[in-house]
Length: 131
Image (cartoon, rainbow, N blue to C red):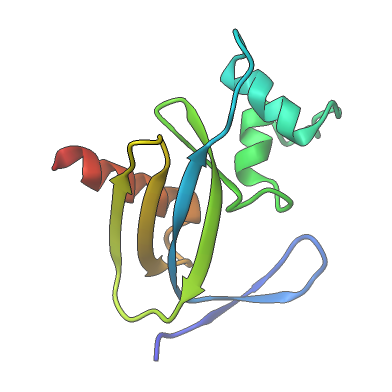
């Protein structure tokens, strides 16, 4: 059984435990409008709201904000939406498979007290690029 650490969530004071997590799912490229930049795409998803002082861009808010965390991933300037299932964890690994339709199947298992979801996806995508 992995050791769990208590962390206080800044958005409501609830207790969150760091633990080994195991996800299997698919990354789907987010459709973009002709000439639309990555920043404009992120803003379209979030909506035309004023950024809080802690964010320098809509891209940063989409990757870090609690409301969107683990719902989107950016890799090589492509924005993906995330569809995933949580499975039972045992050991760390990171793998992905690119499909002909532009989606990416992924499987990641890692300790979320030392690695974030988007970092785990980045490792999985980089492992695929090396093969």
